[in-house]
Length: 249
Image (cartoon, rainbow, N blue to C red; front, side, top):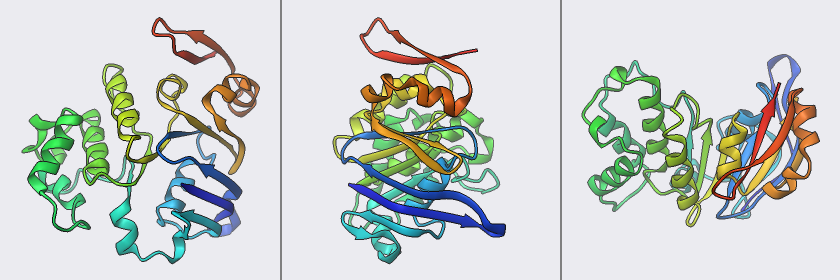
C-alpha cells in the first residue's frame, strides 16, 4: 500500500505544486489520478517515485520513500511518462526494454522483453529505432518499459495519451490484469478510460486533493468533477454493464 501524509512539493519561486496532500492508495488495485492541467497529478507520481523532493511523509510498504535506497526502490517501482523515452536516442525498442530491466538480477531478459512486447502488441517494433516511431507507438514502448520488470508498484503518467481509441480497451485490460500482482497508479484526462479501468480515484485541483474514494463513490459525487473541470458530467450505462462518466459542454 502507498500512503501519503501532508505531502508538499514546492518549486522555485515558492510555487506549491502539491500542498498537504494525504492519500491512501489500496494495494492490487488501479487508482486513477484525475484533475486539470497543473493540478498536481504528475507531481504526486514523481514524488512517490522520488523524482522530486517533498516534505511530509510517503510510505511504501511501510517505509519512508525518501529514506529508501534507490537501488531498492528501482527494483519494486516503475514510473512511465511521455518523456521517459527520448526520440533522440539512437536505440532500438528492444534495447529500451532491456535497459529497464537493469535493476533486476537473475532474470531471463529475452523472455521478459518478449512477454511485455506481446502484451502491448509491439513485437513488430522491437528492432525499430525509437526515433522512427509515431507518438502512439512510442507511448506503447513507454508503457512496456515500465511494466517489463513486473514491478510491485506501477506509476504511469497519462498512458492513454497519444494512443488510438482501439488501443485504450487493450491498455485497460492490461492494467486490470496486472493489478493482480501490482499496485497501479495512473494519471489520466479521460473520464471514459478512468470509468473502464479504475477501482479507486483521486481528484486533484490546484495542488490539493479534493476527493478520494472508490469509483462508485465518485459516481455519486459528480459535482466534484464539475467544480474541478468547469463542465458538466453525466453517467451513461454501457452495453457491457459498466457505468461511464461522460462530460458535456
